[in-house]
Image (cartoon, one colour):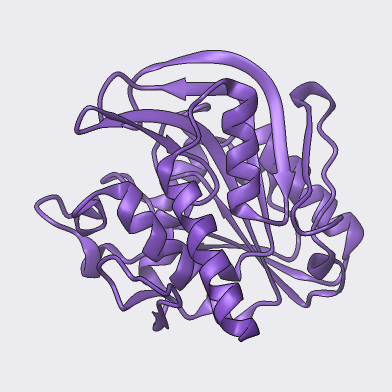
Length: 266
């Protein structure tokens, strides 16, 4: 599958095609959206995550698979795993790690125009695996009166340690909301997002919050799953199919990627 191709399929017929790098990888990192002790669509569905993990195991039986998530609530990751039934789909060779407990390294920001962070701290494990896949829920919240789409790129917030990026609440990453999430997502992409080999967005039901709370709201039926090798392309296609406006941060990241490409060619 080409880097910019996005697959869209009915959620009842979801069959996953992993990125090429997953087929020969010795170690695969899967970052699912499991930050809250709340069932789908606030978090990714058991069916979609199980399909991804089962397919990775079938395509590459020898690979170690690491599930890495950092929670957004006082409830521990191990308790969330138990409440959501994720422990039922964990087989041999699959390990779960709390991102907040992993050794860290500093990732430089390769954006030609960084917003706030010249570098960001995230688990060193990102550099120690051969393939990285974001498996996200599809959500819309409202921040400062503006809609915010959360999909495979926003899902990466859970990889940043709360001890570095918390604000008033120790359970969240308030520093990553200043000056705004759409702006900081540009830094997120150019620090760690560009490292990811693939994205899956669970759009069986789209979660919609009337305010900023990403764990309280309603859901509407979309009955789709989106996947591909480019996080930006996958998130854009999910928005297009759902009838959502394409977020400004996706357009801006594309512009910055083009600037980087042009500079590298000169």
